[in-house]
Image (cartoon, rainbow, N blue to C red; front, top):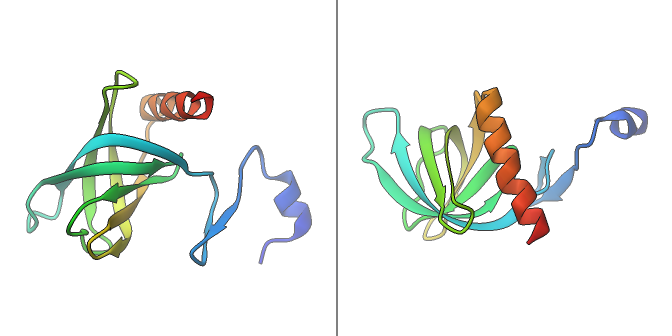
Length: 125
C-alpha cells in the first residue's frame, strides 16, 4: 500500500480506480481503427476499434478478445486526428463479446510523443 506522502509526491500522474484495478493515467474516450498483430505466431491478425486510450494502454472493442498475456503489435489510425501510431501491447484482460485491454510495453521516446499528442487532442475535444 502506498503512503499518502508517496502518492502526493508522484509527478503529474492520475490514479484511477476502476473495476478493482489501479491505473496510473486517466483514460480518454477515443474511437480509432486498430489492426492487431499477435506476435505469438498461433493467432491470426485481426482488427477492432480503440474505444479508450491512456498513456499506459487501450481497450480494443472486438468480437473475440485475445487471450490474457498475448503480446501484440497495435497499429492505431485516427482519420479525425490525421495520426497513426504503432505500439506493442500485452493483453491484461478480456471480455467475451466486448473486447480486450492492453497495457503498452517498450514505448520509445518517439512513440510517447505521438501518444501524448493523441491524448492532448482528446483533452481539447
